[in-house]
Amino acid sequence: MDAFVWSVPLPAVASERDLALLDTAESRRADRYRRTEDRASFVTGRAALRRVLAEHLKTEADRIVFGRHSCPGCGSDDHGPPRVVFPLTQLSFSFSRSEQQALVAVVPAGAVGADIEVLRPLDVQETAAQCLSPAETAYVRGLSPGEQLQAFYRAWVRKEAVTKAVGVGITMDLRTVDVSPDRKGPVTVRCGTGKGPRLWTVTDLEAQPGTMAALALPSTRRQPSIHARCLALLEG
Image (cartoon, rainbow, N blue to C red; front, top):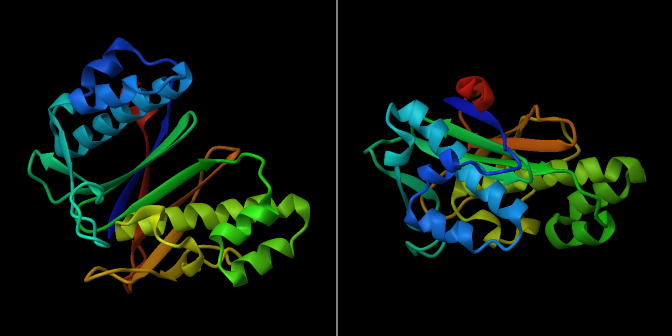
């Protein structure tokens, strides 16, 4: 499978050009942010997602209509994985945003999950027990303090990526998903619900300094071909 992964630097201020791309629901959501920087990150992120998808769909960014698949966990149409309703397409995408960095992963068809995180200081000892498996927790806690944060975030972005690909996100118990943070990627991860894939290839992505990112695709005999793109180059 070919996957296109777009690195997206987000401006600190949303422009009128960004705002003009958003639909009514996105604009209302943007207005609910109280902090100016949070609103700007959301607006610029949604505008960037639309521009990336427009490049693949050969359409105008403001013409894209979003919807959702049914949740594979409970069947609800309210919180399933996002999809493009218009124009008609089999293309699938995954979007992740963390502060002023975003990531868009696009595949011609099938499932995909991506996550990017800006590394922030946290209490790894406490947080690990809440979202890592017993084996992952033991591995992370056994590292030196300087290595623990990197290992925790490696596990976190892998888990986020694979649960997005499954379609349930982090609503599931992340302690049941082992992503082998002790191993260099790609790694094979078992995770699934319903009739979808249960084995995933999770690849660590090169990211900006101070960030970590991962991509999840259904496991096949052939390693996925990952094509890196940058929205700044597209716009420039």
